[in-house]
Image (cartoon, rainbow, N blue to C red; front, side, top):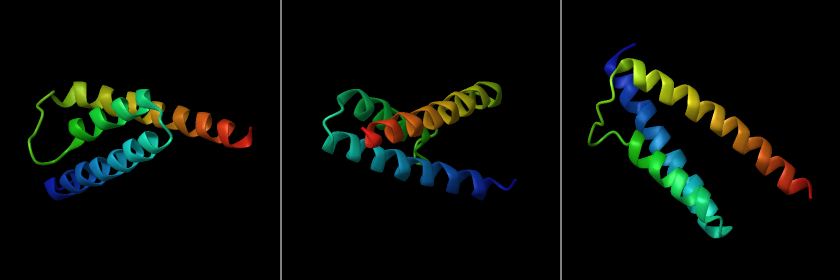
Length: 80
């Protein structure tokens, strides 16, 4: 993939995690504010954090699984 694609994904992830952190702050869930804020900083495209390709792959998988779990947690909370 071209380098611009990865830059776009990092920028979109930063914005998405920023929105999630803001929504968590509005619902007064400090744990998720810290998690999503840290992820926004980790994925921001302005100052690269060099973790190496293999470690980034692990981080991407863990974050993806965490987002899916968060989706189910939020869906359960909205049903109650």
